[in-house]
Length: 309
Image (cartoon, rainbow, N blue to C red; front, side, top):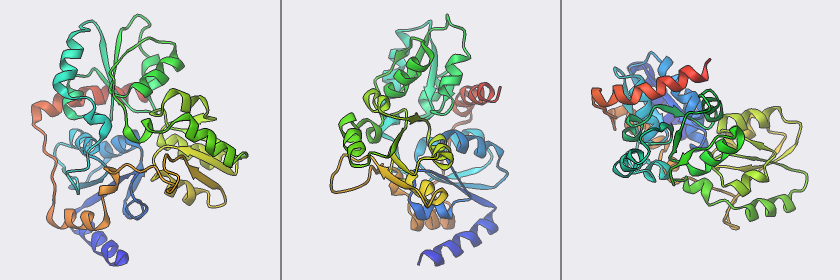
């Protein structure tokens, strides 16, 4: 069945000049079907470079929105409109607007894991892979609001020594991981090193041997001399880790003793069947008003400019 879907999807891609982008947190079979797999930043850059009529985004809504912002003439499809993001939803636009008004002299840096409405209120967008570099590029006297991830914000402050006003948001997948979970894993696998995503809480990051974005974790694990690695992020990343280093052992940090997993239910909504339906019927299209798109584009372009300096 999987082979049949893959063959049909490949045929439709050629007929419609379509491309499939997938995040590292997607199901293994979805990652294998995709033309390009990456983290939020690499997918944003890839989307900007594409010359296709259709982008099918195997990810969540804010990622598809970002692709549309960067490619206004391209039809961007999200196979399931329920594929949202707990972190993005933790920052309601009306509440953030009031929060911003309380700090009128602050520059707003927004994590890419946010809604398009939040991006329109931002000066610079960042990802977990470039956030530290972006903050370090700003004059020391710059007052900064960072939203919506408080854990990433605290990590940036620790790395840069800069003070920032943080919005109180978090990713439920990363925020539920506790230091006790990591310690238990370290006790079970004493030879393993720990890698963690900066969306995790501070006590978890304090136990990590390496902290980075999903793409950075993949690169670190590929080149690391260590044969056993404990991974504090979403389960989907294991597919690329094992694919790149089949001789190594990877252990995902989980809160559930009966399941060696830490899944994002939103990410896992995207399936092969839904991708096929999406491409066949060109559903579900992400549409953005041009005035809104232009406002959201500015902080994203600023991000790319500062990252590539």
